[in-house]
Image (cartoon, rainbow, N blue to C red; front, side, top):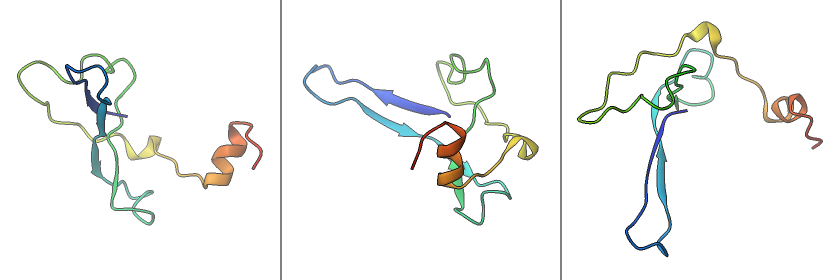
Length: 80
């Protein structure tokens, strides 16, 4: 997922962050009209160059899957 964060000059202040979102893919649209921006592997460090935000190419819909919260937990071996 793509996100941004900032640290205050005062170390006792909390760090702030935001997750960037985009229009939902067809598979996600029944749940919500937005979804996180998904970065391709290998783009984690260079997606936000100095001087501007690039255009985000949509993540391929064929690689997007939706699972229920229970199914996702079971896939990770978490007993609910």
